[in-house]
Structure formats: structure tokens, C-alpha cells
Amino acid sequence: MKILAFESTCDETAAAVVEDGRRVLSDIVASQADMHALYGGVVPEIASRKHVEVIAALAEQALAQADCTRAGIDAVAASYAPGLIGAVLVGLSFAKSVAFGLGVPLIPVHHVRGHIAANYIAFPDLEPPFLTLAISGGNTLIVDVRDYTDMEILGSTRDDAAGECFDKAARVLGLSYPGGKPIDQLAQQSQGGVYALPHAQVDGAPLDMSFSGLKTAVVNLAHHARQVDGELDRAALARDFTQAVSDTLVPRTMEAARRTGRRTIVAAGGVAANSVIRSDLERACEEAGCRLYLPPLSLCGDNGAMIGAQGYYEYLAGNTAGMELNAYATRDISQAAP
Image (tube, rainbow, N blue to C red; front, top):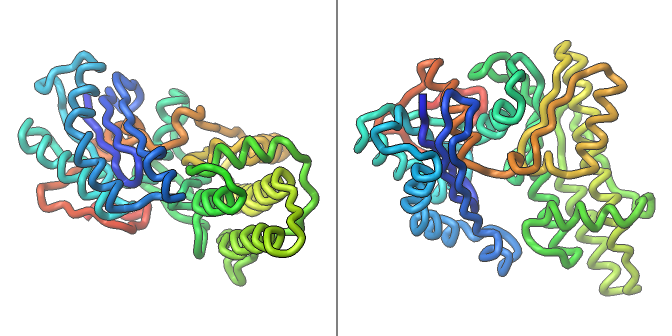
């Protein structure tokens, strides 16, 4: 089964052709990062307009790269939630038109489910059940993946997502957007241990997280250095910040694994590319005797292939939609598309 898939929830427009959920025939991504870097973050209206400009051409490129005709497409999949609502609407609306024109099923895919499914592409032996740490610019979740379309949130951030904090911290450190990679590179230049940063706990919810205090602490340290003494060890702050994020994510993931009895752990999302978090997860899983799947860096960010991969399993579960399907800025990963 060949699925033409679209992703447009933030600042990447992506189209891909995926066969039977695991074989990627094409994967085309148009990034807007350079454009949004001028503003230090994503401007939703600009993102939406850029999606409109490029999505049709990306679809044609994806078909050509896959050596597939329009008649060879069996279904169309698209992210319908969560994300910047204007951006999501562009990809979903285009996908609807393609599905209608080709006379094939439309498959709605939750964006975070797509990130999890990126691991099916990288690891053909991976099958549910397993535990997932899903960490990206807009989402930070610990998810029990019982089956391909049966998922439960065990822990989540109460405020900022981990990826958002990386972007904000990078900005005050004078680094480029998106901030994940520049902070990772800067953090490698220091052993840290210089700055005491907060590690928040959520009363009554030990698997939940909070990053707003950490983000504020980094901003305050940087501003104080500029306004008072002018001394700031940028590399040490980047390392201590990154370690604080990892110290929030990894122990909670391992505690969730202990509570559920899961022995397989999967990482997903753009922040899963961070070297400190990957290293800490590897160490923790080795100590606990758990098997860890870390997606290759190329599959950590937003892409169309991950939507096509999850779309296949949504289709098998009977989760298709009509032309009335709407886009959503927020949506629980455990809920099927309406």
C-alpha cells in the first residue's frame, strides 16, 4: 500500500511516499528555518503562507522521487493536529483535495504519533508495546504505546515544551534559530557545573514536568550578566541548561518504565537529537536493562515519511476521515481523529 503523506504543522513543509508503513520511497522537506531566524522564532502567518507556496510542488517532487504515478497512490495521509492552526490547515486542506481528486481514502494522523512512527522506519523490528519519550518544540510527553493506534499519556509538561525552552535559551545566548543544534554544539565545549538551575517538581504528578522556571532562570542569568558584571560562561550555561532538561526527562521516563513494566523505550521528536539527552538515556537504559531505540538524526525533525508510516497503521485500524475533517491546534495523542 502506497501512501502520499503531508506534514505542515510548524515551519517545515513535507511530502513523502511510504509503502506499507516501513518503506520510504521518497521524502521531501522544505524548511523555513532561515526565514524565521530573522525573528528568533516561528511567525505563524509567514509559516502558513510559505506552506501554501511550496506544497503542490513538493507533492509532485515526492511522486517523481518515488517513481510513482498519481494512479499508484492508494491513500493520502496528513497531520491534522496539533500545531500552528494556520499551518496545519494548509497541509490538511491540500491533502483533502488530493484524496478527493484521486478518489482514495484520507487518513488523519496526529503529529506526535507520526514522530513515534519515525522509529518504525528506522527499526524494522520495532513493534508495540513500548514506552516513548516524545520531545519536540511543541510537545513533551511520556507515552505508553500499547499498540500502533492505542496510546496513553503518562506524563507531560504543564507549561513550556522542552524544544521551546531550547529555542528561548539559544536566543538569550546569542545563538541562531532553531536553538537545539547550536546549544548542543556549545554545550560540548564545557563540562558544566557552573550554574545552579531549577529542577521543577509537580505536586501529586511525579511523571509530569515543568520547564518555565528553567527557561526564566536562563534568561535572568544572561540578562544579569549583560547589565551588571558582563561575565557569562556561555558554554557552561548551555551545558548546565541542557543537563537540567535531561535530568527532568530521563528519570521520569525510567520511572514510567518501572511503573508500566515496559522493557523497551523509544525516543521521538526533534529534541531527541540532543547528544546529552541521548547519552543519558543510553546510560539509564543500560543500567535498568531496557532496550532503547533512538531515531537517526534525520528522522528526529518534522518530515512526511513519519506521517506516512503512522498513516498506514491508522488505515489498518479503520481510522479514515471524510472531507469534513477539521484541523486542531491541540489534540490528545490518545484520541482518535474526530
